[in-house]
Length: 521
Image (tube, rainbow, N blue to C red; front, top):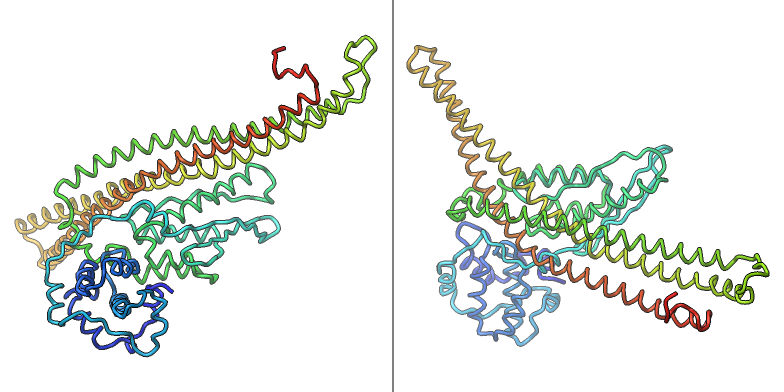
């Protein structure tokens, strides 16, 4: 059981009073959480070895730089266990039914100094690595066709989260509603786009329809994985609901969850202070980063085009090899005898038998080429699609920032200036007192609206700065893609080469000396 899971089960009754006193001594005055850096200072006071301290730190799960009260209690319990000479593992805590053990931390008065020491909070910087992002969750989306009527065939998906260890069933419309509320909740973040929906009439029989359904399944898989791996989305109730709720009214649950929380600006603790954390040259950084990411996006788009053509050629190679072998088999099945004037009449029968047997080897070659095509699609093309989806969502975010927040702010300022001119006109020309008061009230309301929009604009820049960091953190995925491409080629050529090498001596045995292997015709 993880510390996070146990923290969800702990109750105040099993916590010693000393735990609460420690919490009160080191928690933030304006918050109900404990800064991770303060906890690290507390851990240094325990006089435990660095190795043991590192073991305890491994169980700290924090995405925002803070520990909740219950998580701190669990950390204190692990410290006490370690001070007793035991392994600081959450499993050991399961034996404590009544009250958790008390750690030795010194005088409580001294602990207050830990909180009072200046802590440089860096809420703007994302510190996670690419491997940490990719390892946050892995979600599988599998196709489950289900016939709902006589003329329409709908598609259902089994969505399985490795993190939550659960499978749920979702329709495209569920993804659509989830995307809608996610975009409302995180309008200032890189929300990936959904693949297009197409109404399919009749039973799926054509190859194009099946390819469309498979392409959409892959795209939905990329969408939900980008969301599940995102440092902020992954911890939100919306994502948990979509990945775990097994009821039939998941769309209602999603909308209700959004209504309860509102958008990120309303819930983020530093939203109204975002301006204070932004660098002075934020606009310049944004412009430079945007152009760089646009260039990277264009290059990866071309790489994907080349990779798709390579995979298509492997598919074509598989088809051609299979047909080549079938033609050999057809030629070998020829029963007509050669006329008497043919000089090779005596060997033709043996050659026909040999040609027919070779179709088996070419079928194996075709299968190997088909496996190569699937590796290229799954390991290379799909990863390129994944990264391109992320890059495109960043470009969409930039457009939302400029056409949304900035545009609305400019419109509000224009409206405000019009009201001010009307007010100046009213003071010069006699007007009814009621209309003047009403205009003054509207101006005050507009000033409040402008102030809110300015705060949202700075918060949008704050989020955009973080999302830019996220894109740059993903850049090393290039080596993953190149590694997958090289490995697929090495494996494919090795397997194909093994079959060709096995085929070569068979030709020598079947056709004798003049088999065409050592001298050109």
